Each structure stands twice: as C-alpha cells, then as structure tokens.
Image 1: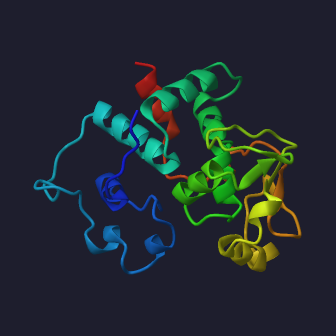
Image 2: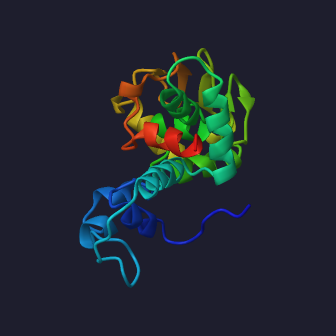
Length: 208
C-alpha cells in the first residue's frame, strides 16, 4: 500500500471544507480552501447532484483523510467497532481517536496528524515509558504518552515544552506540568470528538 504523496490541499478542496491536514497553514490566508472554495480539476466548479451512495462515500473519504488511514485500515476499524457494544459510529471514532499519532496531535506535540505520525515513526514518542514507533498503536485509558527523554532537547519539543500547560487538550486527556507528557483518562465521547463527519453514513456504507 502506498501513502498519498500529492497536495493535501487538493483533498480539502475535494471535500469542500478544511480538514486541517497542513497544520498552521490552514489557519492563514494561504489556505487553498479559502482561496479556491471549489473542487479541484477541470469540472470542479460544476454543480452535480449527489446520490445517497456518493454522499456516504464522501463521508468515508473525509474520515480517512482526516485521520490519514488506508482503506483496509478503515475497514478493519469498522469491523472492530461493529463488535463493540453501543453505537457503531461512535465506537469507530473512538478507535480512530485512540491511535497514537492522533493522541500526539491532540496533545499539541504536533501541528498536524501528519507531523505527529512522523514523530512517532522516528521514535520520539513513548507509551508507559516504552518507545512506540507505530502510529496506529491504540492507547488505552490509564496509558501515559510522553516525548522520550532523548528527544526533549530537540528545538521542536522545546517549543512544545515552553507552551506548557497553556495548551488546550481534550477532556479525555490530562496534560502533565512538564508539557511533554500526558495521561489518557478515558475513551472520548462523541461530543468530545470535533471532526466534521456524519459517522452514521460511514456505517451505512460499510453495511451495504
């Protein structure tokens, strides 16, 4: 499987909204969605009525692009969610939020999930004191996620440490005073997950 290496701004334009895939740039006037608020390509500005299937597909693609997961991974997460008690759509989002790269992003260690994924792959992140270099690693309540001691002197993490407790993190995470470690308090509830996705449509698509 090959990861998408094209312009991530095209992905945001295709979905018709900011997915915040490029970190700080998404908050500036350089954002492509603000400058060209229509789909990329020759027919991007044309109006087209979407079928129910097309709407479901777009929601699934949006979900995949926000979290940076492959199609096969997304299918596997759906299978995991469907075996859990409760609402399948919410369980799917909980699993995606529990990915280590997403937790690193939510803690403010990285400005985007792509940067967080790179941090994890390069061995800068530890879970319960042990180095974990797998971005898809799923954390659990009670786990401690931190920047490894050998990486704390890097300029990027010094900036993070200086920001310290001034950063806002989701209620299901507890940031420690050092600003470079945190504890997973619980799995997030739907109202704590701020992703613009109608997850029930993704469930309907995979349930076809």
